[in-house]
Image (cartoon, rainbow, N blue to C red; front, top):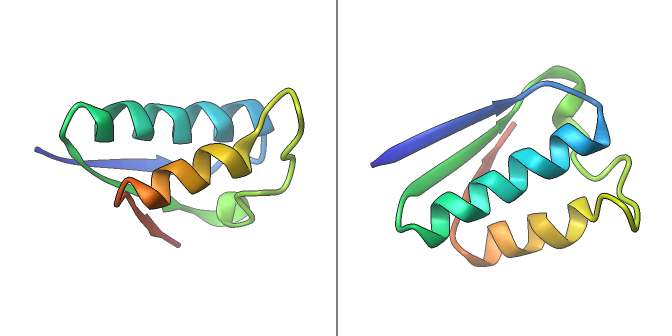
Length: 69
């Protein structure tokens, strides 16, 4: 199944959870596209030890997830 996740928040926790959810779906064999809308285009803004967005984004990319902005 093809799944689209639309992300438009600047909140680091929401961005982190959206990418983690995408990784979960990719691991389940789904085709996932993460669409960054508006202020969420700067996906890595807010990356921290508590919310490691960059780490999850790297896994998403290596797992053949599609990132669109």
